[in-house]
Image (cartoon, rainbow over all chains, first blue to last red; front, top):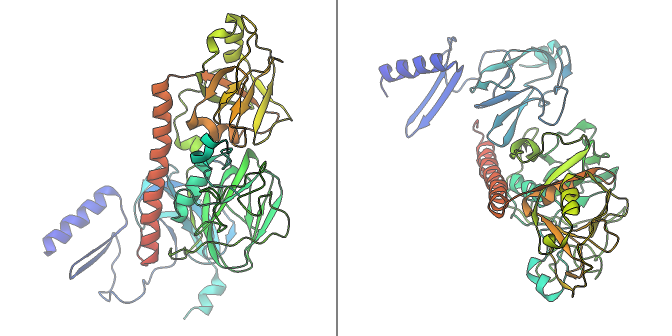
Length: 135
Length: 323
């Protein structure tokens, strides 16, 4: 893979409105994050604050198809791992979970739209208590 | 406890048994990576509480019961991992009538005549050949599936996923439309009765159960009084006894009967019957044989795609990669 290839893939990402792409092949691992400058240390943890982002590609759903009310409403306190939305992939409904204890805000993606891996889906304010306790 | 039933023994006079809603059981098994016909629990009395005595993956499908897992809401048509001691509370359905609980590996009771289904009339199969009671402890089967991390995943419910083109535009609220093929004695009913059969919103009476639904609303008349010998029947057959009010034969029906048959609810819509509560109404919609087969294929394809997508999702989660 040449730098030109990577530039081309980055352009495609931006065109498709995708936030992040991870590509793994024999002897190659590429991670592109649109609009972010990150140290080349691939092993290190991401220095970003936790956010409610799409865990894959699918249709964003804030409400279960059998229900009237959304999983969470703006201002609601949630716990790490709590189901806050869905990503529909064909007939399958994949979970979107809260990344940490905190408070969810408004939806950042329109329900029913196709979102890609890493697309921010909801405003999210992590619990300050948890920030202090993390290393 | 039920699986997909004893179809192979129907010819020997053994009732079908098996779940009323095959689609729901099959989807539960597909989400879990179980065999298509692994046994599960059919729930039709609510509320109900299930305590898990060992960690496992489970799926809850069928009726939308606003269930909770250790107090947290569980979406309908959902599959998740639970630890030892977890409590699943299943409330009266807000929609539908029967819920299905499946566990990884299926529920492991001995097969009798090729099935783990409970045969109530003969009191064999399932768990001690009887309805489950409070305090029963059921064994989970062996499974090689990796425990599912995170809050689990689910299936889009079939009423959203499957085509509803056949549903009449003027369908009254609280009414379930099902597709019906005219049966052997259809032509022996008066023209007025044939018309009433299709136009009536038939009420599912309180004297309905897994053996059959007794319908009320109108009476259907024959052109000429008819005596028939007993002949083989299958789930979905709509018979008209001398009272003139139809009966739909279902999972626990006798294998033979002598009442004339006006129609047969197509196999693809038996799950809709299973989810129609007592007191609600049914509308029969005529369908061709070709369309009936196409509807069955559509449902099968939906279950197959769920199985494939669930397997992909599970393997991606198990290897720690993002789906």
